[in-house]
Length: 184
Image (cartoon, rainbow, N blue to C red; front, side, top):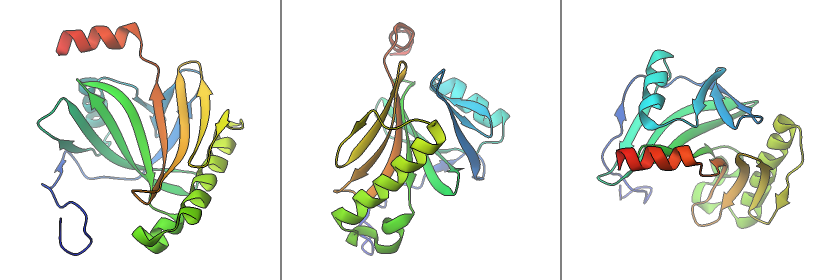
């Protein structure tokens, strides 16, 4: 803990290159996340780092001594700006989280109420509905899911973390299992 905000003040992330805001878009037909029209997800960790370097996409490495790695950058989707976290397990991308530090959480931080977080989640769900050109397939109090044959994209609110985000995850494929076997 850093003593001021009460947040974890662990080791500083390792920067590969400077972070520059990239334009986020989705290829919903194939289940891809794009940054400045470059397919960046889903990829294995090695391909991800290679493509990021080749295309001047600044990445921060946040690794632990476990089989789970978190690589981060930033981007914007319409008028919303996000921190983007790519989660890898055994070098395979499991999910991507676009954390929004706007709306009520920007104004109130950890003092944001549940009602305000739900309003922020609803703002993200409306943004996704517009960008994806479809309504959510499933809506609950703290999340709205847009389902596709390859996986889903969702807007969610975490009451405990006082944050809202967009998540993207994929159904596990045979190729993913083969890659995990090879590198585990």
